[in-house]
Length: 184
Image 1 (cartoon, rainbow, N blue to C red):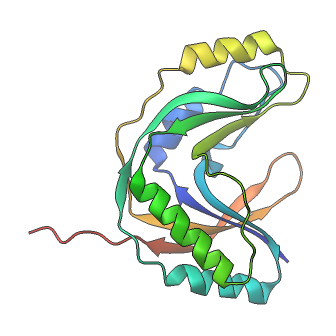
Image 2: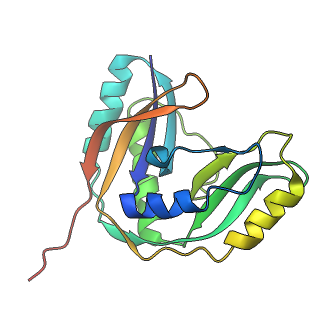
């Protein structure tokens, strides 16, 4: 069995910048810098033959490359029980189109739709219940103006996620190119 997800990898420079704001909240379980990504679709645990079908269906996606900007921070969960800290993504029609195509490809491989609303973000930390709320509020305040330069998205990746110990290990299985315009 493989635990799969599809995501946009982030350039090293932006992962380094994000790692700089991954501090200041006691008890937070910060994501490893090398695991920072923008998830497009969680596939789940599948047999090897289904993983091959997912990979083949993703290979048939025809979508353009695009620029993306990370902007702002926030949290999931309630204000009294935040569970995740994240950096947001500026609205992008091209990102939404790619998400739809990835969802369609995964469904073609026999995986049912996940049904959740797409809220593009990069997860920075998971928060246990013991996290001090005042420190979360201060972190949100201090980092609320985060904004990246435009990031050129030219690929998306099928990852395997291995759970163990304190942190998951994300291993790229296959990279897919997004179409680029011919420049004259």
